[in-house]
Image (cartoon, rainbow, N blue to C red; front, top):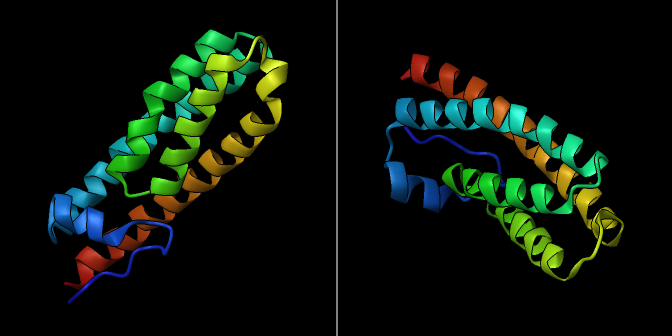
Length: 126
């Protein structure tokens, strides 16, 4: 029996990394979400404080988490934001891309949360 991931999740990548160990995949998703949620709050705080370098460093820190759960588009958005921070002189220079990124991160957290619920139900049905 095969599990259907959210279309935004790179299924081939997930299966190549974790095979069909849906229990382990669920653990990875849970751990990732538990790390992302507090980091997202700090990220918003650092941006509000106009601390561009701390904002960039935090995006750099959370970027790989999206790869672990196959959300490659969000991982790419993190990299693009990080790159734009290198040429920016203030948070004002990156504010539009920051809000796009934060929206994508929030949506990604929702996807991860939903996948955890679906994976739990799927594991019970196997």
